[in-house]
Image 1 (tube, one colour):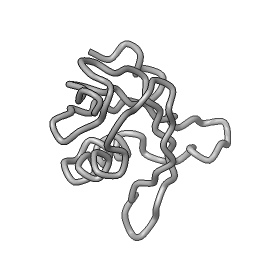
Image 2 (cartoon, rainbow, N blue to C red):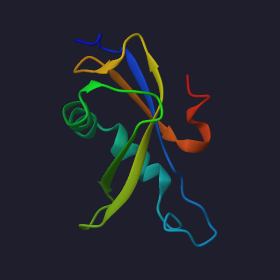
Image 3 (cartoon, rainbow, N blue to C red):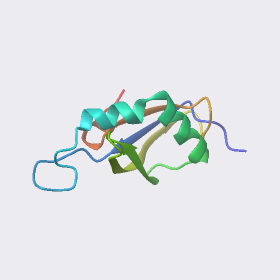
Length: 102
């Protein structure tokens, strides 16, 4: 069994104003949803086990009023082990600032 990581940093693509699918989506809303206890518990269960930097997970978050928003989460950094487990802290950031996240 792989040792459980203390912390995993995940990123997702932020919105852009140049007409791509993310334009008009409130990035702060998505961050709040992804960082919520229920969503993080879901991620631990759905992706529990060994993980690798660069791995990507296709997911979606609710933007309210039954409006899902597709997101691709990418593993940016793994600290203290190699597996996602119940005790692993998940740090989720828009992709443009994930590599510098504390």
